Structure formats: structure tokens, C-alpha cells
Image (cartoon, rainbow, N blue to C red; front, side, top):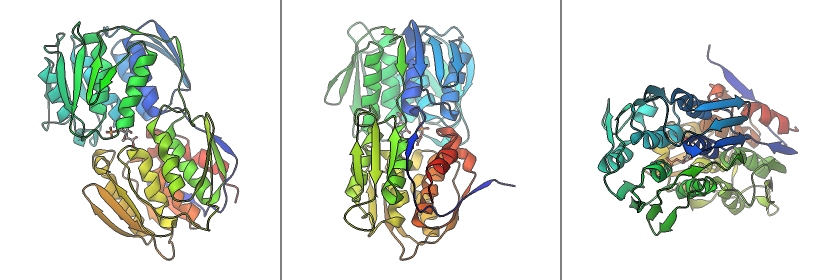
Length: 429
Ligand SMILES: O=C(O)C1=C[C@@H](OP(=O)(O)O)[C@@H](O)[C@H](O)C1
Ligand SMILES: C=C(OP(=O)(O)O)C(=O)O
């Protein structure tokens, strides 16, 4: 029988919650540590499915890596992976698939990169085209433009300029950036992002982390100039808490708080830390410290207000805004969310379907979603589409004072295995 998690109506939350490490930082740090000269000691690393995928792949590639819970010690191999032939299974982890494809493209080995069925439906075409345009030899073994990928040995970059499209996933640009310093020609590699760049804070995050490993990228409008330079391990690195995971608790604080999250704050490297700026527009009270954020209900009225905003910079945390929309006064419109359609599931479709169950009126288009809250919220049993964020988002509906059931709650393991336990720990009534 399929497992279901029942969440009783949540009337009040309180206290402080600490959160697991950032997925985006953890997977970048693991790869950069492997590409580095020297040993890196990573602390507060996320321990979840997505980081298991990256760690498993690096081990298969012969990287020496020791893990003790959320601490990992990586012996860098300077990009010269000891294992030259391997089949890598990367689950549904975009932050493993796209960066590893790039890092292995010029490593002189022969590799197959594959994942679960949904990963086979998530686009890779722009990245494969970009890599092949500068001398990589990558073919898509199934449908063109999608995994599984076969990487044939190549070591030589044939140009100092590469173009990559930015409108589908920023992970293509991030992958190219991280791979570039070890294979760039002596004058450097110019990575030009063509067209709009979605999820741009993740590319800034990539550059900031590359800098921690000794490589400085210079940016001139849409051109990223990456020097030919080895990565040097910073020795030790502390991973900050995951800002996307924080969004569920920050939303709860705004609905029935106050609640404080620890480990992410004003000085965060992550784009999703800006989630609270959108939350504040609903009228929620937000206070930020260096590495903590506290939210509480609005001081202006009994309900938060629906908002109409462009969310292309924070696609993951944007889902949390959609999830609280049924409890807001007036409609909420999310724009700039086309990338939702190619993530763990088609998140626009999934969100529309599930929010209708609680009585919302929903309209949507290729890159937008409009949610009109019901007069009276209904409890529901939610499907989660093997999407960790659908499960976490739908749990928030209980803060509207109704009982909810979450099907396949275990899918949160992708980025937040003990989400429901941490949720239970902040519920006061
Ligand atoms: O680079 C990253 O760490 C990520 C980039 C975003 O993806 P897209 O760039 O595909 O929107 C985000 O949704 C994903 O969870 C993590
Ligand atoms: C889109 C996501 O993941 P991925 O890193 O697989 O792209 C996500 O975590 O919401």
C-alpha cells in the first residue's frame, strides 16, 4: 500500500529550526573539490538523494572521498579522474547531470550518464550542443537532446569562445563554467550566454564558489571569461543551510508564526534567500540577521495578501508562494516560471491540479500560474508526482486550518529527508 502522511490542522508554529545544507552549494563544492589540487574538508554538507548521486558518481570516477554524516573529505584529482570508463546513474539530480557532463566532456574518458525516467525527459540539448561546438564528442543515446548521454574521449578544446542558451536551465552555464578553468586555452574561455538567462542567481553562486576554489571569472554583460587556471582547495568549507528548504518554514512563520530559521540569512550566497523579499510583499513580517531569518504574520491584517510577481530568479522557492496563495486574500499570479515545466515534474500542471483540490480557481499558461483562493479552504489528499517540493509545499496547506494528506511523502528525500520530522518539531498547536 502506498504511504500517506497525515498532517493535522496547524494553528501555531514557533521556535527556531535549523536546516540541512544547501543542495546547490553541496553539489558544486563536491565537484570543485574533486577538480582541485589538495584536500577539501566539507562541513554541513547536505545528506540527501541529490548529494548521494554526486558522491556516488565521484567515487565511481575514482575520486577518494570519505564521508562521516554531513562531513566529507575529498582528495582532489585536479580533474584527472582515475577511472576512464564508467556508467554513471544520477537519479533525477540536475545539479549532478549538467555539471558532470561538462566536467567529463574533456577528461579523456568514455562515460555514460543516465538517470531515472524523468531525468530522461529533462533537457540537455543546449549543453550538449555547446560542448560539442568546442570539440567534445557527446551523443544522446535515446531521444535527441536528452539523457542518457555517451561521452567519447576528448581532451582538446577547439575554440576560445562557446555559446550556450540561457532560457531553459541555468545549469548549462554553471556546468560549462565549472569545467572551463581546467580545459580553457591559455587566453581563457569566453562563455557567451545567448538570450535570456533564467535562474541567474545560480550562475552567480557558481562564480562565487569557483572563487573560493581560486578561480576568478570576469563578467562582461553576458560574456563570462574563465581563465586557464587550476582549482586550489580552500582546505575547509562550511556549507550554509538550504535557502529553498528554508522557504517552507519561513512561509509557516508568516502564516501562523513567528518562526526563526538558522543557517541562512542576509549574507547568504543563495538566490533563494531573496524568497523573504517576496514574502514581505504579502504583508508578512520579516527580520533578517547575518545567518538567520525570522518571519511572522502580517501586522496590517488577519491575512497575507496575494501578489503578482515575476519569479524567474527564484524558481524553486516560488513554489512556496503558490502553496500559500490559497490562504491569502485576493489572487496570486506567478510569472516567468516556464522552467517549472522541465523540473522534477511539470510543476505548473501539478500545482494547478493540486490547488484545485482545496477549492482554488486556477488559470495557467506556458510560463504563468494564477491562483484565486477559495472562500472556504477544503482539506485534501495531495499527489506529489515524485517531486520533493510538491510534497513540502502541499504540507503548508495545513496552516490554513484543514487536515491534509501527502501521498508518497518519502519523495522529500531528494533534498530534505527529515522534512516532516522538522515540521512536527515547530508545531505548537
Ligand atoms: O544550479 C542549481 O543549483 C539549480 C538551478 C535551478 O535550476 P534551473 O537553472 O534549471 O532553473 C534550480 O531550479 C535547481 O534546483 C538548482
Ligand atoms: C529543480 C530542482 O532540482 P535539480 O537540481 O534536479 O534541477 C529542485 O530541487 O527543485
